[in-house]
Image (cartoon, rainbow, N blue to C red):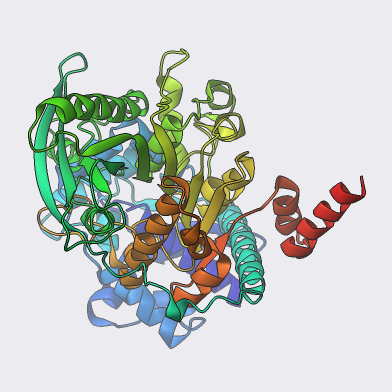
Length: 566
């Protein structure tokens, strides 16, 4: 019965995660073959949540749980989510929200065993509007049916599929980490005697803000420019303008403050950094959306974001000739781009990856469910008019994509078109842009030999972004999704971006050693251990995925020997 109780707990957890509402649900019912139908009263859960008492109805299940599991369940039942009914309404009535509600409705049924889509949405809104707010018990109380029927068979399949997927993910990440550590053991470089790229450089810099307006697309683009100051006190490296230019593209529901730490660090090493906001998917737009004053982000953002950066570069070229504060200070022959999440997609598109409409049409089926949450966003691109969008910008010579979303909207056909140096960065605990499907497998599609895959153990989708504040925080992200202390991740990105840009944008080979697995091992700090790989073929990935992979180093050596013998 251990498994039975575990599945019961997961069933209750599903109820919580889906914010199952209640306009009057009195019992949770589920069928568990071959034992028959089981049920649990909402009153029992409420009593347990409020006073910790286990009544006769709940004792059947509680007796099969450990004290730790019961404690976790009670914490879960007591947790309140402070979100407004307007926010809930906006999200659940959006196209993506309706897809999620429809899939949840297959698991949480009404008393008549109908899809719980409408009941879930209604009770979510009602619970959010209630004085007690969104809690598991209050959600059940608002459910418009006396009984919430859980599709237990479907739930168990989801649990099993998810468990297998997470197991595979952990095996892939562990295999790549093991290989990176093995490769680093061969290094003879003493990085303790080398300059520490995690520390700020010697340049002073100034921040300048511009408001750009692309009237042709009705887009207002605020941009902060971090501009190094050249003087004899700085350094002989890049001591005079024009400075190489780096553009940073934020993720969805973020803004230009998200990567201040990275912009300042790069400016201290002599890079001019332009950090813009994408008005159709920035924090301000989501604040209006959550307040009911704007619609959801439009699919055209997949086009407008790369065009925002193209327009930015055009305007900076113009200002470089006319604005006294910028005149002659930007080098448009040395341009790099960095993006995170949706911004990761943005820089991949700018690097030459075309939208893969054929794959979108084939795979974006409303009836398909996936544990890759980013596919909900990627499939929005399927609503775009079918055209050959010209998103590539030849001025961009290198890109760094952090937690990018790309597996479906770009796919192998799109990503393989990129011919410039690329660094992909993934976090092992990213549930929004899962590393295996969104960074590791796409890494094998890149055809340029100057490519790098940086994996950060235990990092989440939010580990790379600045700490949320009252000024830049939009989404109420639970602490569990933020992951461990993010300071090490900031230091990794600071160091790797300097090394990558110096090596491949400025052609300074003395920085290449910082891109080796041994450097990642040197700066790693548990529990957020860093690994770097410079090669991984599709065959090697498939062998790892299938559990039959030899050492990547051995496989690479055998490949070289084979070519030599021929």
